[in-house]
Length: 172
Image (cartoon, rainbow, N blue to C red; front, side, top):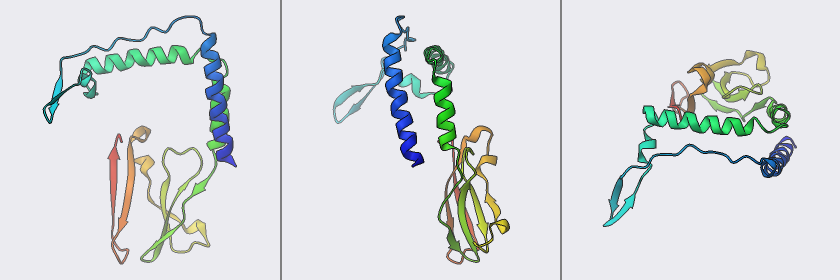
């Protein structure tokens, strides 16, 4: 039911934003992205890649262009009068506790649990599923970095459950 409400809210948002954008009379001035003479040849065919310079996300020019794009977007989004109400509604719809099905590895049951608005679900373990007070945090990906840039991608256990390996991703 919550997902239906979420999709309804998103569809309404898109519709209202489209209606609002027609009412905005001023033209949006987008930052111009420079082009470079860059190309690759694939099986004898030259394929131009004039925006290759944007692939270097740490370059000063790329960061400046992204900053200009962000300013353009922010100034447009700030004109939407019902934006805060939509954010509040979507946040309330997404703020609910959720948990994955447990898996047994060795002597423990493992599962992910999110209290509501955590960036990433926390990986717990417990010897007894009937008593959740005995659950302990096994891995908390929210503590790996500020802002949640480092994510927990996978956890794999040895056949007897005594060892665990996990895969992290930095920035996606």
